[in-house]
Length: 312
Image (tube, rainbow, N blue to C red):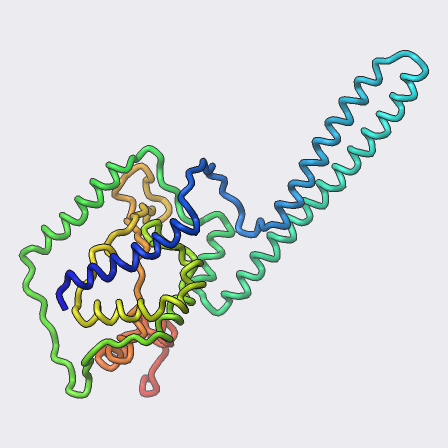
């Protein structure tokens, strides 16, 4: 199959999904203000916060009415003043009680969220330390606003050009012959493999994706046959479509302590998907050395550093 056919098939996948979204959810422009929120701040917190602000406004209005009534001198006005002051006091008490309940709810939500996260990742040291860093405010360093898009683009382009220049005179790559019992005649991802891989994806997605990952998980049962056919053709031809090579690149500071205003302190991160690992692992695992533990399930530092039965 010519490479152009696989490109057309991949473009058809993106175009059809975009067309469906345009019909069901027409494009609408709006202003979105960046208001970073805590991950544990859910709908219940927003509802309680809204009630607290409403009671605060009610107390302010009652307090203004009490102040206006206090300026009167007649007996009737004094009676109205007493009523207005009493209502203002009641509104103040209601607001204070609601504000106290809101603070307690925020504290409880925060505690429950982080306790649950830590307990859920207690067996994953890497993720556990990442959560601890985030909890202690030692997370990712934000990019500097002093660097514009053109500076980032030029820096990343120069980095790629430098790597190509430094490796231009490198000797050709050498490959070892595989054993006779290790063979991979063809790729054949199954529908169940694709559905399982999609449902295990995190909900984060790239702006270049046709539809959000959360929506893709809901419709994967319907479009899985087409996706399988697409993958089979791409793998059989060994051709990666140009439409799948497009990605939004996010600059991320390499590690804390680096100068955030220097473009060399950043690495480019893009959100490209990988779906072949489960199909390649049974073939590649027998070809790897036994002491090769990186990025292999069930292998890690404890296995690497544990003494062998014959060591003394």
